[in-house]
Image 1 (tube, rainbow, N blue to C red):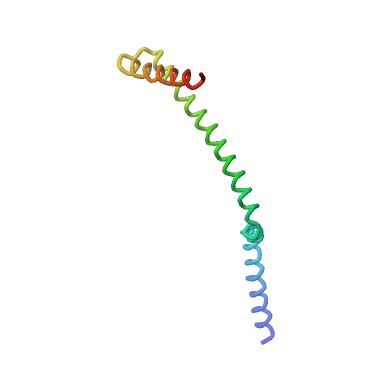
Image 2 (cartoon, helix red, strand yellow):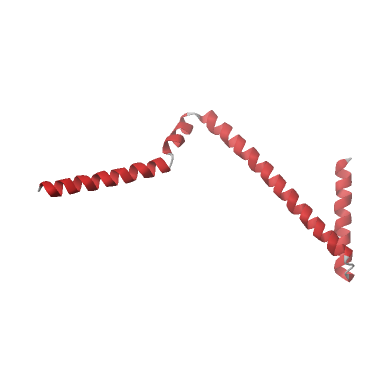
Length: 102
């Protein structure tokens, strides 16, 4: 009977150890500390939001510049219908950029 009690205690210990590791991985302590200090949570969200916004702006700028570059290359090929359409788009974008810089 003692052997089975020790086995049960060993099993309980292993399960408890597993759950403690899972809770440590979930970082529940940091989460509860943020809930106690709402200003720190607000500050962190402000920083993360600003960095995400800057990242989106940089990514969109790179994407738009790449699209405009390819449109200029396609416009230089002098394709009959597509070339005129692309040239009009490029002219519109360039005019808009000139208006925004003034």
